[in-house]
Image (cartoon, rainbow, N blue to C red):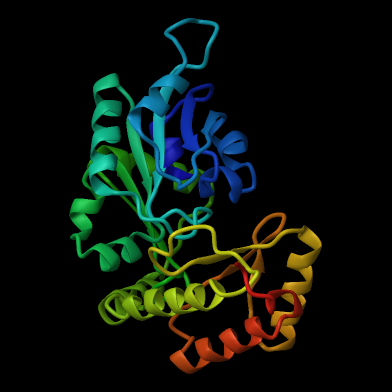
Length: 282
């Protein structure tokens, strides 16, 4: 939210992919706090190309909200942890800058893209004017996100943070936990990616479809009916496997640092014992 507030004015147009976390999971904060007008672009994989963005931009006319900010997400949560290809992001962001837009990168799971691709974090972040990363997701810190940008952006963000009551004193102990997670848990993300692929491979032989490439650590199961998803969640919980509903007919599984290879095999067994998964897909 600080990235949005620091780079827009009330009434501005902001471009987002339709499944973006910023739009779907922030309690309406872009509208309530920043007063901005989101324009959503639907995609199958969470990746936006410049042609899609250009087609959605408002004209320079007083009747329309002026375009101001493009928001991208890497990896993309609702697209199943999909990695935004760097060459595509560079092209999209580069043309956005030429048009006069600023670019924000929701990099809550940028660590996963770094480990999966081997690309340096600074390269993955370079196309954007602002980047957020989260220490309490894949890295496993108890709490903590940070916003990165140039000095002017951070100065503006600090003012907005103060206005929103988000400043914290004696925060060093939380920063220490984030630093520990960064130093000790980054490389092991490859294990989560392996575990996610194992889950997806096991599901490939059942009626429970994983209709997305498993690039990183997220597996989204698509079932035929929402009621079946609720039954699946109950079945998993009964087998001590924690998952979440992810929209109608969807269930999300996310391996993490508390999940071992043995745990994954237990989860596979529980999934395979779900009555509506037993039938093989042709």
